[in-house]
Image (cartoon, rainbow, N blue to C red; front, side, top):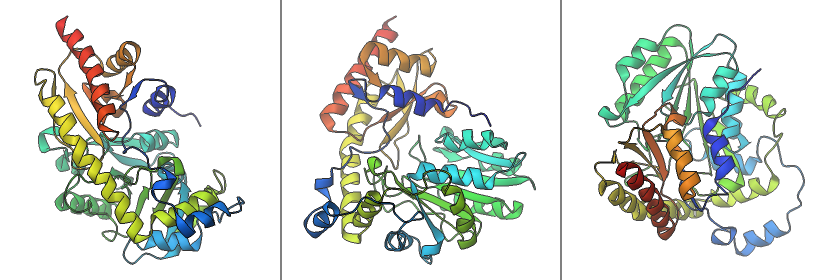
Length: 372
């Protein structure tokens, strides 16, 4: 099996810890342990023996995760090393060569590359900026066939920050049901809404469904590498053996810390911290973009610490980002990493002063290019 380069992750891995300003992240500034672990919990963590954990997640952790999904049981949960491992296990276990997969574009491209590597025929269906970054349902209807095996969505969406409405969700479910296809819903940005209630989950809307989530984005804890999938008991059980060939298990430390995070009071506090950061910083980057109407246009995101902005310069987005790295020591994500050249994804979840200084450097580069 050959894989295609995961361009976004390769660029981020190369540069995010090298540049002066990393505006490529899609989550908020990470929490420290001291911000959510203390008292008896801290004492227990310090005395924890660092052996192997239960490979599908301890029962206590899976109970905490199941509580987030009405009607779910512990046997419907598989704990993984980040949501990315859940995505990998699902593509590996569900796809056979020749299967047809429908994939939301723009979106995080991990499952796009994996599905293709495992031999699927992958067909994009598009979110349209003209529709407020909603899916083109007429396009989707025309793509679904009796050979459709999976429909993959990211909701809330990365990179646009858009959230599917109930009409779109219902039609995706209807089309999957007609084809007998599975839905894989990556919901890792749920809980990182700028305003209003959490984005509605696909959970409970369809039987042939896997929901993927984790603590990296909405919770600001990417370093824990905590993810999970929830789905039908038999389907989750048949995916678990694939886990034995990858990480075997997340760490016992991650399992223990995740149980603390998912305590209702702690979880609520962490998610409110995330929303506070988003509400404070979105106006900052919004004002910065709107102050340059000849250079940028964008739709404000509804969720996630990300803004997907169209730029009005005649330069390829990857070439533009490489220039930002080289000349200004700033990293953002080029749109063509989402099959959307002509756009940039800005992360705005860091400290306000850091964000402003990074944007100032981007502004310098754009002014130079526009001046030419």
